[in-house]
Length: 143
Image 1 (cartoon, rainbow, N blue to C red):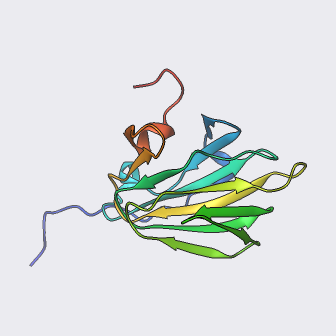
Image 2 (image 1 turned 90 degrees about the vertical axis):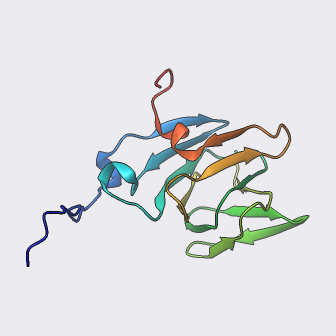
């Protein structure tokens, strides 16, 4: 029996051909897998950090895994500062405040991240402001 339900087609994504979106504070993100290509269980992408930059402490409504692709990074979590080297991979449970920072003052840093939900959110620890992660993947001024 043939099903009339269509399924998404496999996709190969080339980060060098995709737009990066400025997040502020020296970070820019290139979204990769997400609902726009048919993903229904997770999202992922790459975030680049300028030398010496860091993102604010924040938490997510789902699991997160981050792999350091290049550069020198520090994961700040639970009062600890954990140095990372390329290919080190983290797993962070939901609702745990953390941040990544580029510990080099001269070289950029890049991470590959995966969130365990397509509707992942980011809550800034200091302000309590919560936004969908996907809001960072739109051009400035975009909806």
